[in-house]
Length: 242
Image (cartoon, rainbow, N blue to C red; front, top):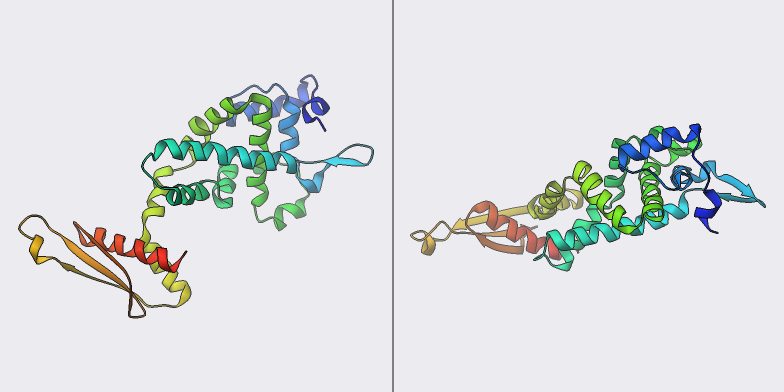
């Protein structure tokens, strides 16, 4: 089914709120506003199109999910030219997570414009908002193309609503993550560190080890206790949480 052909029509007064919404969140004038209107229709409020068929935003959501992942992958590949695949994958998963997309959608004001049955808004526990954002991105891609979508997401949405530095810092804070893991698993997590005497005259140098229930699971060294413990935690995290 050709969504562009099916939903194309001339703008009218009823469409003005959608034009205002798209100008506010994406900074664009749509070629086919009906794509974006469909992106805001949850399956609980599916639209009949004749012949017993109904449509909603699920197909656009599927497309938008793939587009967002592609844009984020490109962004991280360029921004972190020295990072390995594992780090990039984890950073990407945080940027495109349900939690992140739901928050972005809420800050964009999507809860006020989504068309859905009231019971669905409760049952979805807000995932409906992130899903609608993905659908809008799918509509943007069909309507404006990949280059425009890429620019809108990177220069507009991500720059304004996603703190990449904070996400990166969370991803690098292995000490907190291992401690949190220990609390959830009811395991003892202890750090032991010492200053290395043979390095004192040159520069401060520390070694740290991480013990889980008394067993050494990680070791690291650095210019400070904090740095050494982070490296020890990173090694332990790779063993404990993979």
